[in-house]
Image (tube, rainbow, N blue to C red; front, top):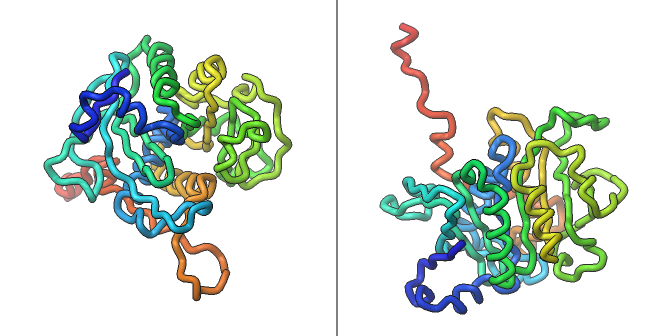
Amino acid sequence: MEFYPCDAAYAADAAACAALFAHNVVLLPAISNANLGQLTLDLVISTLLQDGKTFMLAMSPNQGVELRKVGHLLSEAAPPIAGSAAFAKQSPHDLCLNLEVYQSNEIKLTIIQQRAPVFPGRVHAFVKEFVEWAIKSKVSVLCAVGGYDDMLRHDHNMMSRPVRTICSFDPRKNSCLARFKNLTIGSDVGETNGASSLSNNQWASVRGAGLAPLLYAQCGEQNLPFVAWLMSCAEGNNVPDAIAMTTQLFHILQIEMKTATSMPDTMPPTLPLAIPPSWNQLFGRDPDVSLYL
């Protein structure tokens, strides 16, 4: 796997490219059920590209969360696709590629958006080379975002949409995971559950999580901290699920709205999420009305 930077100054310097990601939290979609990971990260990227100045990291309130595209990754295990611009802040003539890399250097956050699945039979090779790239780049934590099939759920409240957290490391013993809010092993955000043991049994009730279980196993072998955030969902219109997941993700990453000091402490404001214009094509064109005349 190779990284191709947007800035030509980094193109001939492999060490400088690797230094871009040192001590970063890296988010990527799990390529899972209902494409929830891709939809969520599309919404995160669009919001921070468009309105990053209105957000801050809770631990560093004086810094914004401005995002910029820094390049893209290329892997022989994933197809090199190209399409039209996906976000409002992009030029209409820009191309949208597979495995695009966006970064907020101020808060050490990198987001990798994967827009096409891995080639059949190359999943294990892709996961292995991705983790090797993350280790070589001195990534702090690798995080997967995705959905899983809700057909296996047996919760007492089936109408809820909790985010399940699965870690490869005990957050109580790993300082690099301290930046995440309320990170509890095997827990569902928004519900009270006991912490489960650190084992592959955490995946027993999870189906359709895509690359997340393989990344978990590979990161465990390589001693790279890994976190998966998964929300149960069904195929269909998953825009509401993506909005709910994005809201939870901002909370976990402690990315908050900047508020005036004169405002009273009340309920937190609704996040001004920026819907990507590319979502207008999620369900194709409307049916031709002449069919019904």
